[in-house]
Image 1 (tube, helix red, strand yellow):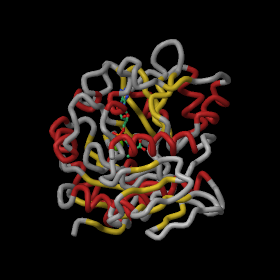
Image 2 (cartoon, rainbow, N blue to C red; image 1 turned 180 degrees about the vertical axis):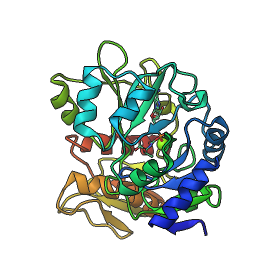
Image 3 (cartoon, helix red, strand yellow; image 1 turned 45 degrees about the vertical axis):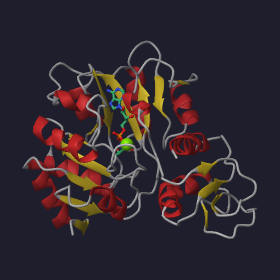
Amino acid sequence: MPVLPATDQTIARAAAALTAGDIVAFPTETVYGLGADARDSKAVTKIFAAKERPRFNPLIVHVPDTATAETHAVFGAEARALADTFWPGPLSIVAPKRSDSGLADLVTAGLDTVALRVPGHPVARALLETVRFPIAAPSANRSGRISPTEATHVASELGEVPAMILDGGPCTRGLESTVVSVVGTHPTLLRLGAVPRGEIEAVLGHPIGLVGEDAPIASPGQLERHYAPQTPLRLNATIVEAGEALLAFGPDTPECAGMTINLSASGDLNEAATHLFAALRTLDESGARGIAVMPIPEEGLGEAINDRLRRAAKAG
Ligand code: TXA
Ligand code: MG
């Protein structure tokens, strides 16, 4: 089995595999990533092949700190303010790519911008500090599937494809990073995620808009069929119908004869985000004919949770 508990030794082995041009799955605080040396187009090609990811969809480049990020992209005052506040952490910043960025063209899908992130997870940080090169890493799922928040999810999505899967336990955030573009005159949100919109607006000092699906393709990944379980989802359910499983939220849940998973019995949105993807996987595999999803408040992290649920409902 390529799943190995993350230790100093296995992290060193993973670093060696990356240095040799192989791909490795590793934990971050958001979701598990499938990493490759971002300077090596052959290695990056392996990521696209393993995920069956369309070549037009660029990858996030993971770096150890803001100074390194600025060797790949041009940061203005707003990018620096966001980096100072949220890095290390679950924010990705899309900025103009430097002509001497050293990144393989495939990483940015030929765009003149690049998405950068300084992850906070100790295993991801140790890996970056050991290899001393930028690591391109999308979520370690097959394209269009639910992102993995546990090492076993990666194994079931990608099997023996990565040279190894570093197991750092369940991801604490559970939602992908928020993607903000600082390209152009106004920063825009390209993807809702683990940093709530309100926290970004507090740093910028003004509201920030979310690029809609009908707007120009600012974030190609948002076009994909995404977060797709096989079982149909029914959102804002207040009762459970025959044959349905229940994805619950909060203390007062409707009666359900089938499987029930409560994202947070106390109604805590952070806890709900942490458990969301694992719960969707478990309910999807339960054999239920449908998944009834209780309403989740559209505030704070609830906005990103509802975004993922709406995509999952559309795809199912
Ligand atoms: O939490 C995360 O962000 C995880 C962990 C592993 O870091 N990674 C992740 O990567 O979710 P991925 O590839 O699944 O999603 C990256 C998103 C896609 O929607 C992609 O289109 C967008 O970021 N993106 C990347 N580079 C971009 C760029 N230059 N311009 C616009 N969007 C970009
Ligand atoms: Mg993804």
